[in-house]
Image (cartoon, rainbow, N blue to C red; front, side):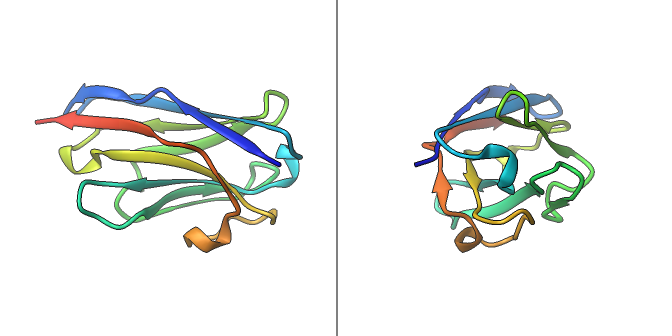
Length: 124
């Protein structure tokens, strides 16, 4: 059973930056593609970014491309999301997720394990 724990959320002004972390335990992290999803107030959960098991493949939603960077450290069983130039519309609960595949998909049902989420609030 894989367990995922996010950290690094908080309150930031528009234009600011945050770095989220997702620490995995209980599974084979280095064999799993990982993803970040988010759910804003009154919105559906949406894909933000994904990274392949070896870290060489990444994909981003258009809404975050050029501002967010996903990365991972397999030695530390940890994935990161560097978020720059944050906007009020980035306000959401951010979830990390792990797949039973090495390639990151863009859909929630591509992922099997989920963290509890961390709140990111961007003020204008």
